Length: 102
Image (cartoon, rainbow, N blue to C red; front, side, top):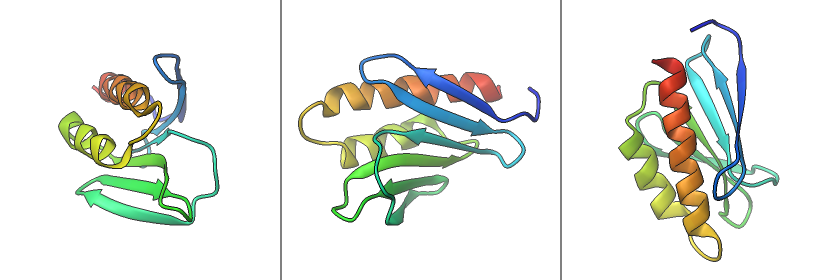
């Protein structure tokens, strides 16, 4: 894989924007638009960007991260209307990131 920054657009159950930076070994899955006011460490290598109300806006990954860790974070922090679609989209994005860095 090259060291160039990659952007992936996941057009699944819920559209997501994914940025992968192989140089830093980081990936960002943007779940919703909004102003990030805090970052919560969910587990080793998985950080959650939230807004002032605690709504999940994005998931930052320090690669490599097991996909199961990301799935646990999305199940815990994505709830309410449309959350099942967002969780499926996050799973698709995680698979795309895993394939891109393999």
